[in-house]
Image (cartoon, rainbow, N blue to C red):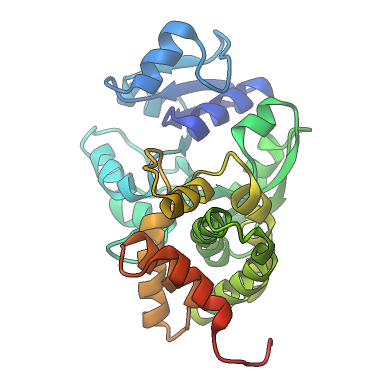
Length: 321
């Protein structure tokens, strides 16, 4: 199976490495001025992986899009609309190609899910799927397996991807709620920032409460939006908590921790813009999101993170459920 991977950062490069490893023919694209691309092209490695010569690495986007009918996108979630719109200008017939989104986020300015963003942005009749769930490159590269989810409104596309992408490294489950899995996957990054703030305060013991209340919070939002609240308890959200709330490899957790100790953090933390987007969704659907609100107020400087997060556990006494 031929597969094109657009994006050569930490996750995009892993996906290319993984799909090549399980026997697919892979072409990976990155921007010409990307230091990630130059490192991989010249050294055939990056900070996490070594790349075999069987992976074709290019900065020619048109070439990569023409290479296959299965296109994986792994870029910043907030860049998806602009990037997708740029594909139209290439003049390539993208009809019936399958685009698999491997980012976790919600568009900040609109509150739209990423599948909605790409559907609006690309002027061709395309198939859309998402690849979400727990896992870090460092763990996979070390031979530690995990379980993930592929979801799509097109069942034949979903089945095809699960059957062709599964291996003894990643076991894929068939998603049954695209909306719930997208919201859940994005929201877990917000919870990751909250967990990092707790770490920075040396309040790690409160992560259990964060996990319990955070899942309920997102379940309420998913239900209000028309999805299944059970999706919040699946691999896309609760199932990804260990990798996001506890792992030393989690960018969102590190961002929250560094926020408390006053140390700058220069890596992408998708939970920052997502905290704003998800709070607006809460207003739109009349759902109280106290943890997301506390994170948003912390990352925007409206409230000291210690006060915002600690205050969650000093709220008025109420029934648990």
